Image (cartoon, rainbow, N blue to C red; front, top):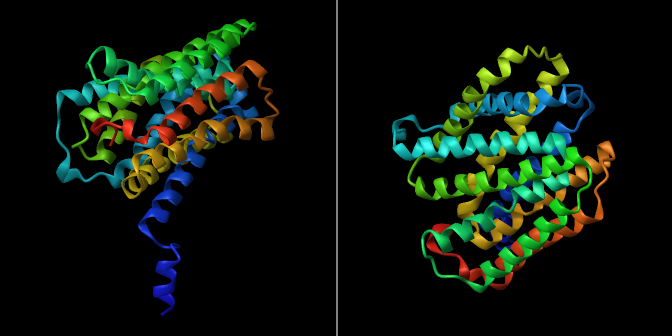
Length: 300
């Protein structure tokens, strides 16, 4: 009887489980800025920091994902190279951008990826234009203008442009994931991380940066807890909820990321970034709430 009541209360339904998994994934993803902006990481020279963190966190993540791969389902396709290439670009640009600008700006600008996907589908694939996508695109354009054009500090301005580039690269990752949807998700994620780490090694090793034990620990956390584990949680949670609910729940990441950095490291965020980020995230949220029917089969 107790089990029957528990099921009807919704506590253990697949939907509530999926929601919990996605919220957990978003929270873990949002710790990126918290770790990268920590004093121990800031002690690494700026010119080396982004390359080094992008390289080593990817290698740690790939090791963590090894036990999750269904090796009998592994196969090689040309699309895997495109996926690994766009992921490497996204990973590198995002981390370098994050080291040079605020966590808020870097994260908000990376979340323009969804809008670039809309734009690519319209211009290159001749997909039908939905009103929700147009609203999200216009909000993102205004948000980008607020963040990028209002920045006066040269280092942060450069970081904003690099982070915006990571959003474009992330759009490529999303398109590749749709193209390769029949592949084992753990294998695809592992390969992306591993290739990214290996490609960056020839750039990182000659720099001769010696890391302290605490820095190695934080990088391991970046790879395993902040990157690897959330991918697993999201992969298990997405099939249990609707596409629009999954998208909305994962928007917690860009909201929480700068919050953790502000609470722990007192990083200040200017009003242009707050306004621009609100436009980017708000436009996406409105798109998913008001026009959920605008999801195409490619969005599933």
